[in-house]
Amino acid sequence: MRVITFNTQGIEQAADRGFFDWMVQQDADVVCLQNLRAKEYQLDGDRYHPDGYNAYFFDAFEDGYSGVAIYTRELPKAIMTGLGFELCDFHGRFIQADFDKVSVASLSVPSGLKSPEAQALKEEYLELLMGHLKKTLRKRRDFIFCGTYHIAHKPIDLSNWYVNQSVSGFLPQEREWMEEVLGEMGYIDTFRRVNKAERQYTWWPDYNRAWSLNEGARLDYQLATPNLRNSVKAARIYRDEQFSEHAPVIIDYNIGGK
Image (cartoon, rainbow, N blue to C red; front, side):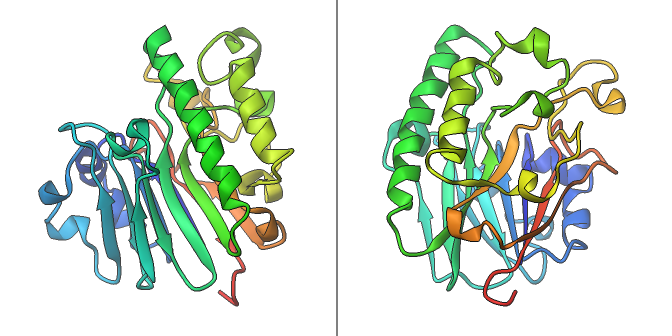
């Protein structure tokens, strides 16, 4: 089972840059998209609905802001949107597809870079998301939570980490949040489960040559429930083309023989 997650930073712009042409060549079973910045009714063109995929969207109420989507080859048994709190649901930040053996979610955590107020909202969101992740562990099925968490977990996940310790995305409390999820709670950072290489980033700031110099951060994850620990087979970040400031993360799993 191949799962791709990608922060589009505007699905229309990513499509203009060739994302969907690339996507249909990847043999992916599930594709999770974030930060669409468009509503479903604006995405009725053929390029947003490639042959062989079912498309599901969860819009933000505000125009041109946030929004998530899931593309699936197999028809899901159910689609769930929202997590029951305003910071998520009003901004279209969570959608989940349930299959026979596993559920796959596309989610986005708000960035805290713009202001102290934005950081406070991010930390409130993370606390509420933590509650959902804890409840999920009590369920009798496996889950993969794909998306932009806006946290670099360890120094290996951020270039120039030493000078960024007071910057949103690498703050002590954010890293402690990720450490609790991956440590005490037992979730799996599926990328690092099989790929230990350095300088593996998924986001590059919008300044000169960050992409070409590979000075970025790994902010995009596929976090899986503990039972999937031995199901991760391969992981990579696609950098041959630039569809947004983020890069697609591709993880292969062995789930139910797929």
